[in-house]
Length: 146
Image (cartoon, rainbow, N blue to C red; front, top):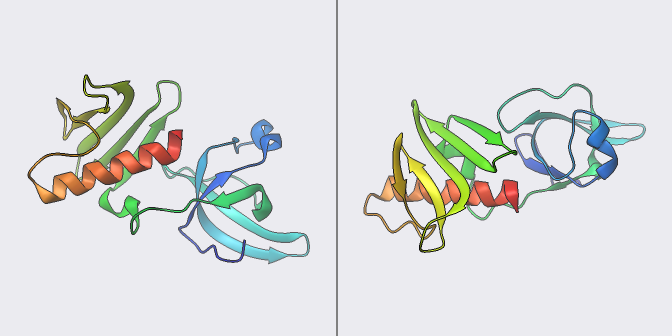
């Protein structure tokens, strides 16, 4: 895993880590990389910015390939609720919330900028910045819950 760098997003692929602070299938952000005698090790944070104690061997993770240039740059904060399969992304105090229940058209349900609205994930709205934020939020949701 030599192509990783700090701030890359990785996914845990080792089921045995579920007994620690790392969980199989979850996404993490690399905040430090160290080459040790036992291999490359990562220092990690959760996507909602909580530091994970310890250093973790790189082979236990795979790099998440992003579809667009840094999807996370559109937002200041991210919260994930695995129980109800939702992602909340914030920018300047306003939120985009994405849920797993579907609209009548078959898209994701999205609460946009603190107003409950329904959009399909094709993002057919006029404002370019909002459309780009929704597209990135939907991709992040799919990365987390794929």
